[in-house]
Image (cartoon, rainbow, N blue to C red; front, side, top):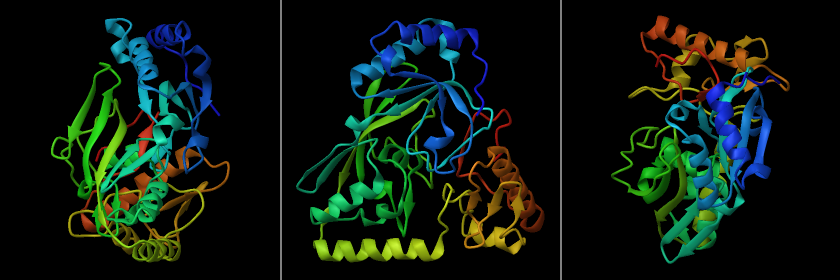
Length: 319
């Protein structure tokens, strides 16, 4: 694993963190690849796991120690189910929510859940409470916070359908705020949540449903995913679906299904998935993403857009 060189302004931010009461919670030369479902990639200069609003404020104060520090690279890490980290690592501070932000509270039809909560756990909790409308989330391996950011969805539903509001902090300004469903400006796999913002809490409004019906639906979703999607080291759909079309079908039509580059392979089961070998290289996955994009553009004149988020790569995708 590689760790990037520490820039002067980043060192100043790290010194500020070290002088705070958070010093014991700062992990230097922190492996990020193992925090992703690809399980490849390098290290971050530092990783901080925050367990309260007060700790988040300490992080934002360290980042904003002086004007120049507004350029300190920061990254929000969730469950890593939609993230590819460069083999060279991330030359900045990675921030994760701790377990205190995974709590689930259900009052009648309202579900208040922390941003670190696992989507399948929330789905099962709502079904056990005889609530419907969130069963689809049982097949989403990410966190609630990540799901809000990208308006995650599946099986005809998405976060925007049940989310009423979310608490968000801007890690650059330190400002905490609540945004309504409308303020979040949800679109297909997008929202107004910025790259430097962290989703702390989500409020869902669900409907009544018999527990048996919910469990049946969840079992069907789990079985469908096992049948139609690969296991192993992958990060789900690599590309978003173009309007009115399927990324997987477009990729398969170019003959790329099963294509291998180094330690990465387009899944023989589903062409919009890339699987990594144990001890694989992020560079191979990235190269395969570029090759798929090129083939679809050459064959169909359609430029696929990355759904996978990239971290630590010098060359950013031209979507």
